[in-house]
Figure 1 (cartoon, rainbow over the protein chains, first blue to last red):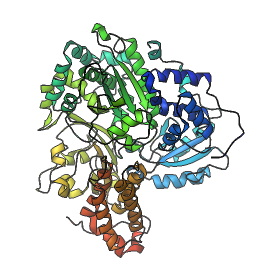
Figure 2: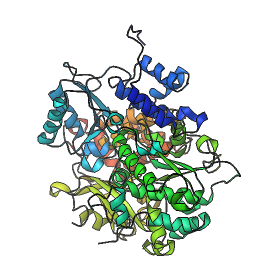
Figure 3: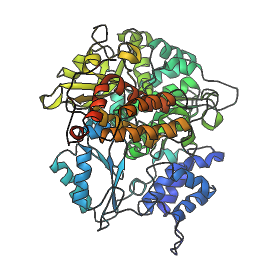
Figure 4: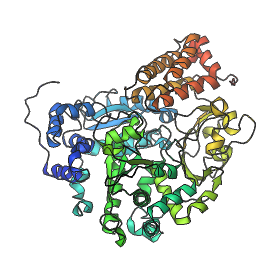
Length: 189
Length: 445
């Protein structure tokens, strides 16, 4: 892992509040349970990937040894371990999507974005990633971008609509815990 | 048109909100349960004959009755919402459209099991559904259906949603529990079973989303009434998620017992095969179950019409039958290359193997590799026997059923479509043309 000279990352106050809320979900001696949800928060907070420094921050936040975070972040496919473009397009490649054209969709998206699967587009806007079944097989082919599913991408029109929407997102999308504030469930705890 | 017990109100505007859900009879099952003893609730579920809707089909009431209840030790109900089996997309639908149905089932189930904290483990890709569930849970707290002293009954329950991180294996219940504890999703050796040592080594029941949702109509109508729906030991209704080359893919709630032929061709359901083509094969219960050619999915080997029930779909065992599984129904038209599709599934299982057991870690890799060379015209006749042999060596030799899930589709594809594999060996040039597909006669095992 490359050393960096960047300042030590810190969670925003909104993310810290969300982590505090999540920790109420588990017994006090089982803080490690919050690891996956906190990794999701970290990835959303720090540019769509979890650098070694960010993983160390997660370890520190949950009183874990760094290896406990590394072994988990490398096991689950949703965590990106190297820098990604602004939008990570995760294309389902499994059977039902393949039957309805996911191979063609992947080739099409490579042409349109200039990114190769597993890599970023030259303009830094897109990362293409092939993933396994997204559980939306009846609406194939399907891709996921952050928390949104784009379905029935077997028409030029739907693919273009998706890319137009993504290109139009000038600012960082607002994270759910910033938008909604604290759910009332917390107020009961 | 059959009865709909789960999705009757799915198209009512605002049904995802507490107020509208309540107006349409929501939370009556919880009110009813809280007036019964926990044992009586378990008894109703037993009487209903409900079988696990996640894939294994194990009777839910029986699973509940196995839960250990040592004095003073917390126990847990965990909902398996890690829907990842290729072809299966019913739970996402249920949770995003009817979040309160799942929450209501979780409350009734937790009460029956004596759980004071329960979790819904949802696959990480469905974070947007997690937000929908959290919003609905907050509403249920505000209405006094969660939290302290629910509806004045003296029973208290906290319910939380927990996201995974992208791993098919976490749909296996002990891998799910490891994941919920913040670890890699490596399945555990059994025994001890989760009913004795589950989450945090405490007694735990893990149930699929649809199984838990089904508890609501079961309590509302009574277990005996529920058991009258369906055929034989396949009681009640089941969600089927239909995909692949169909005119109307989607989610259908069926009374168990609808003929497969009607399900595929009737306009009420899938509306036939797209583009006016012929059906070639079906994977009826998620990618893990054996593929069947058209002849055997529509009719059993004895010539009886095959029905959408646990028993009928498995009629003939693995020689001429398959399994109902998760209800993930994948239809393939005449242009589908079975070798390519089998390779695709093998790549999936190789990718998703946790790597813990050598037969699965190495075997799934071999299956993918050899199927890749068969599909790409570099295979030999020996390779066809090799994949069958590798599949056999994985099966039964692993901690969890991912081994079987990887082996079965390969064995079944060769069993029913061996001539298509052989054609890839004898006609590599033709087979590797874009869009090429074998159109010979199907050879039965």
